[in-house]
Length: 215
Image (cartoon, one colour):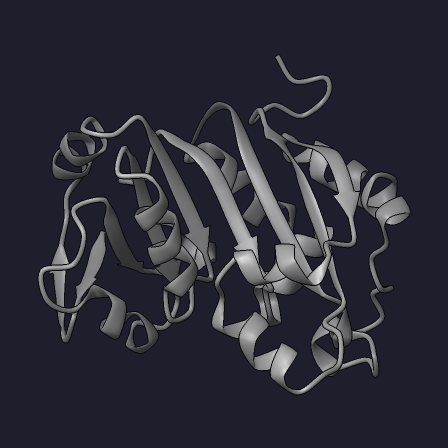
């Protein structure tokens, strides 16, 4: 897999990743990490947790990956549609404020993306997905005809789409401003600075990797 370290891009093979992963209790995959600030915050919170920020654009990750960095923080350059086969044994997946094709996938329109992410995970891993509801206020082209997700929809129609890919929705809610701020993403800071209130839907649950009826 392609690993970003400042201005350099290095290769990490499967054996090297497994050796790195073995040194940590848990591993969080931050999909669509952007500038990596959320991934860095997660790495700072727990030294026994490996955090992998993944993004299709490498330039945004350069600053957080520059210098000596942190031993429990890794930035991977890859689109979610082409996840590196070396990624494995993930115990938690975060997808915060997705946009474009990643947003559409997390709304359940592309089960292949959800299934690919599930294949990187240890059985019964956790997930956190958050949606920026201002994408529907007014509606932006990226969401197309898709309706704004609500807690009821997330535990209803969206949960059905997730379940087909082995993701089980357990809770959906509107987080308060303090909770949103705690995620330490540049998206939340940028959007909050231009609005009186940032409207977000958060969804959590488990990834089993098995859809209903699978054997």
